[in-house]
Length: 366
Image 1 (cartoon, helix red, strand yellow):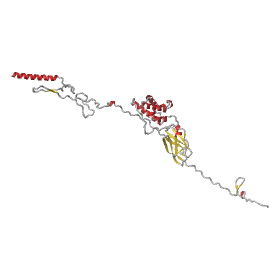
Image 2 (cartoon, rainbow, N blue to C red):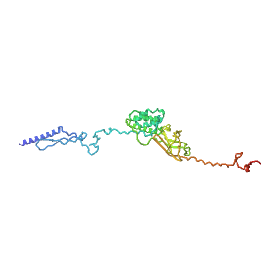
Image 3 (tube, one colour):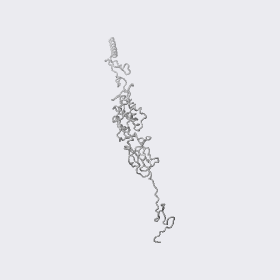
């Protein structure tokens, strides 16, 4: 009986040992821990129970959002990732490095104001006005003469070419850049200076975004590129003039073709339009002179205004209308006496004859 009981105990111990060994060498998960170490497999328990030995698996480690097993992702921390690392995008759309940069179009030409092209011949001022519409850059470029015609034309040709290039319609960036460099400090007119500044902005935009194209827009409002003015009125030096006299109205910073002034300009003096057609006088010191006739006005200070196209400038109290000359009244003529005669020397004589002698006239016979 004692031998039998000992054998049963030995058998149970042997079975338990076999069960432990089998559990240790079976393909049980537990070697892929977050820290890379072993363990984490099913826990094996044994007890005095005579029933079969069972292995209860331990909870497996949670998987991270990136598919690896380990600690859960951090919560409540924007962009946080368990264990550090680079945040991953969680929504649709391109990554920040893949997003397209917002490109702002460079500034385009400000208003001139417009230059009436009354003679029908192209000039830099009127071509500038055509270029204000970016859709017309190609047409304007075709009408620009060669570089031999002057710096203003070279500048406008470069600007028209850059206008096409920045809009993806052709043009020549390299030539525009060479012309811009060669014309530094050469723009003399107000429209020329504005064109040079805009060309520089286009070239700078191209340097920063070599492959970008944009659609240019004509600016609305803002300060004009030019503003001519009346520099003075030449009345002969004394600041006064009379009706029907000729005066010279001096215009400074003219942005238009002076040859068009006589037909395109309207001059008023004291609110009254001058008679006849203004005459273009000689230019001196950068001014343009219009010779006009003073209209019939009363004495006193008067304003002078000049309208060219839609732009009008005024000079207050430009000169003074002088009062008309006052001639002295003539002295009244003295009439000779009724009986006075005239002597041989043309002097009046009294009835008594020369030297006051009494002159008698006889009648009848002695």
